[in-house]
Amino acid sequence: MSRLQVSLSHPAAATLRNATTEPLWVRVLLTSIALIFLALFLVLPLIIVFSEAFARGAELYWASISEPAALHAIKLTLIAAAIAVPCNVIFGLAASWAIAKFQFKGRQLLITLIDLPIAVSPVIVGLSLMLIFGARGYLGEWLMDHDVRIMFAVPGIVLATIFITFPFVARELIPLMQEQGREQEEAALTLGASGWQTFFRVTLPSVKWALLYGVILANARAMGEFGAVSVVSGKIREQTNTMPLHIEILYNEYQFAAAFAVSSLLALLALVTLLLKSLLEYKAAKDLAAAQSR
Amino acid sequence: MSLGFATFYLSLIVLLPLAALLGQTLTLSWGEFWKVIASDRAIASYQLTFGASFIAATVNLMFGLIVAWVLVRYHFFGKKVIDALVDLPFALPTAVAGIALTAIYAPNGWVGQHLSALGIKAAYSPLGVTLALIFIGLPFVVRTVQPVLEDLEKEIEEAAASLGASRLQTFCRILFPALLPSLLTGFALAFARAVGEYGSVVFISGNMPMKTEITPLLIMTRLEQFDYAGAAALGTVMLLISFILLLLINLLQHWSNHRHGAKA
Image 1: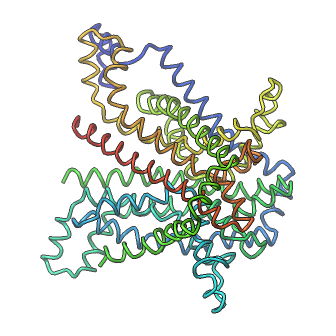
Image 2: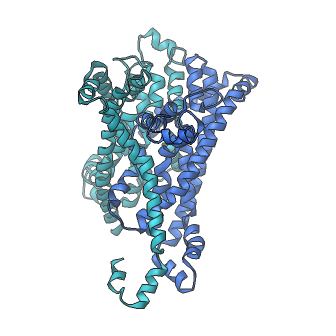
Image 3: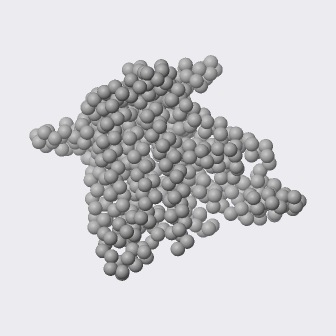
């Protein structure tokens, strides 16, 4: 662009420039269409969440997010994410390490299966867990005899959250690790480092931005999951209600301002996620470029 | 060791529950299975789910291409912010999206009141379902087309122009074929996501059986009536379709990478 602008006075350059870009009216039209579409579908929903949340005043807003049921829902959401995300970080590291650094039978199948939770409907995830752990499920009777509650309790919510957020870390790490190859690790091993030393000193630092990126995406998804959790939670107030379920209940009880107040917290989380994501994307792109230039 | 752990964890968390789903379905006889999955109510729900998903993915295909094009090729104020905002549907919980869209398109909502003045019912109708699905599928086409468009070499377009092609000819003959695999991948991803969507749709659809009931909701209803086998049968149908879509997406991505790789 700048290269062309410099020599714009030259008539041939102007022709060339016109030939590889669109007339002004087309550019303005396309930009307007894109901006109106995004404003209608992305910006408007965000605005309405915050405007409805404060529609009945700041006092009610504060009351809605500090009442015991809301606080409990916030706590449960944080707990579920705090368990599910680390589990998937460990899995993501193990799976992407295996896929990127080794050749084995069924490698392609493993990659496809990692993507599975993205394509499966959340309701089906909840249903499947119900069929194993529910009162009439395969393990239902055994669990009942041993007095273990998984469905309609916190463990079920955690399991559903793990399933749903399963792919995010692995998907971010696999392409980067594949790009980086294994020379550095081999060098470390030749120099006498142990397997774990190599992992913590060589592999982990070189993927740290992509890993963080995956964690942030998984976390956002974990805290916002609705379909799968709503099947397995039973929606018992102050016991098994996560934030999205609490929003649903408030909304169905026509407590719109309160529903939007709790929603605004999750919308804020989404905005922070996007901000961090942009920052990390920049860092991860630099890592990838460094790996490619080697 | 890490492979063993990864496989074990995958089997435990993902494959075991899905096997249970199939196992439960197998307790039904073929006739019973058919009765559940081919009931009028189920068929009406497939029509809505797949019809609305297809329309939403098509809308996203067209607008996604324009958004990706504008973000890659043009410069304007606030571009970086808008670029980041495209991922909002990934980050915003579906329940929040659902109630926000309902508030906008309800008959007394900001947009809904103007639509209802025109006699168009947006929320609590198939149109509302489609609007929610457009929202959740919005990032897919943009994010699959954007990197391909960024990597396209300007020289090809310059060559086309210097050989006398008009801008429209260059787009149709040179750019569009190069973008096609990524466009289709984005479309398939948006479609697959829309077919399984539950959270944002339940609020805006109104959930009337035979009219605005999507298949995931029908599964939920069966489950609430303790009809586990019926729910599992419908779940199996959905799961099979998801598998087929996933396979298709993998093939498309393979094609896209191949094309992309050959050019670079």
